[in-house]
Image 1 (tube, rainbow, N blue to C red):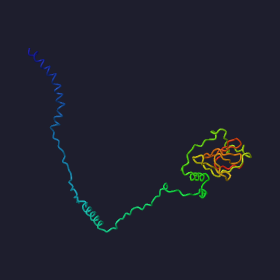
Image 2 (cartoon, helix red, strand yellow; image 1 turned 90 degrees about the horizontal axis):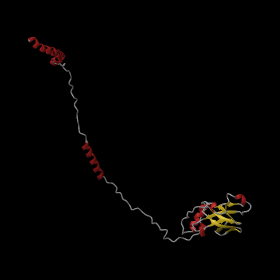
Image 3 (cartoon, rainbow, N blue to C red; image 1 turned 30 degrees about the horizontal axis):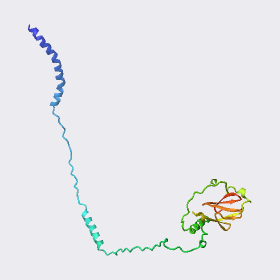
Image 4 (tube, helix red, strand yellow; image 1 turned 90 degrees about the vertical axis):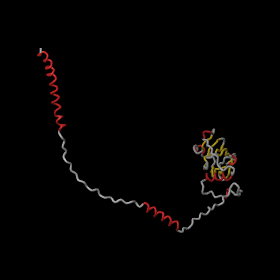
Length: 226
């Protein structure tokens, strides 16, 4: 009976003891390591003395005093006063209030200008009501029905069309004031250059004449030698 009751205890002890022994075997080195004292070797070092620093204040106040003294000395120095005189203005005459002097355009020397510029200058002087030349778009020869450009079709007029030397081209915004000087004679619109050549139009850059029923466009200041 006793052997039967003890056998389970022995069996349990046999089962439990091996794991306990293994755990104790593993934990024993850690336990010994904790029990050992860690002895640190003595540290050696050398103490060095910190160099002394001599601090001084910046001479800011002294600089301020020097600047103040310099300003006072300058203020005490006698300087010549700056005198501002009123600006002298020349009286400007209003040209619109003055009566224009009578003068002759022919007395002006326009030899230094080109013929075209001289003609425009004369036209402005002769027409004080219009101080500018109205800008117009020059119509091409194609817009005129049956108008032939002389400079492009000179061959068909050689020996037929009389010689013409356009010396002055005067164009203004008013057709009644337009004129050209050709062969030494001033001719207005509607006038005759020769017995068989009449002046039909004066445009900004050309004139249109009629010769034996044909309308011919001639450039301004053009010389046709016949």
